[in-house]
Image (cartoon, rainbow, N blue to C red; front, side, top):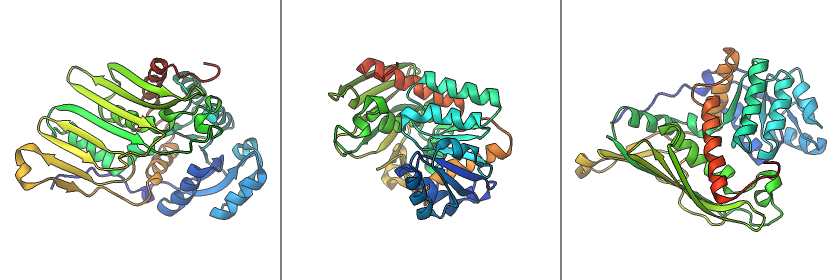
Length: 340
């Protein structure tokens, strides 16, 4: 059997105390999985609506609820802040926490564009504090194993990569996904997954070609993105927020193929096919795991306790590279956010 990448046990990471900005749906998963699968705890949650914060705190046994983000970041019991607000608020909330002296884990997409990301990193550098994009997939065992397969030549020379992320999301024009002021659109919510995956495996693309369809409000409803890496590798991403699709990943080399059959960015097994050994059928690599958010939180805790300002797995430059790619995709589509 092919060796599977060894991923550090999240429970072995140092224990830190997290505070959450914005108790939305993704924050609920963070609040559920971090105490379950790591040694860390959630000690506070903040919202502009105190009642909402108190309800969230009651649901997850969090000891303190704050009626403002300023109070949350000022809480002396909070070691680090998890920013789970809409993309349009990420820059301001990350900077708020950093200026209060708190390390930050910021949900993806990190900000609405590369310029805003650079502003966050500039504050973190000035304050000497850790900040990382919460691209949780990069830390999962199957992503680590995919990179190992490529780096060690198990698939031969890589030729083609394909990923799709298509969901039937709320089509109410009043919802945030349709609102340019809230950085809506398929790209920042859905497309960030295949693009960040491609970047993790192959780095920054040498060419980008995008085609898509915009909503009446001006955000991207769906797009296809073709990326070139060097002279031999082409990668294609399809993102759509209007209809459910098969969200799979396929990495094709001249000696083999690695497939993640569905919901490729969540904990999954890998199907490895070696072309010269196809008579034996594909090999299943058991890389799926429970939870998922615990791996990024554990990495953040290790870095924070070690006094690091960034992670080598999801560095500041990694985030900037992906943001630059998404900026170019939106430029080609003609999708702009207010103030750009």
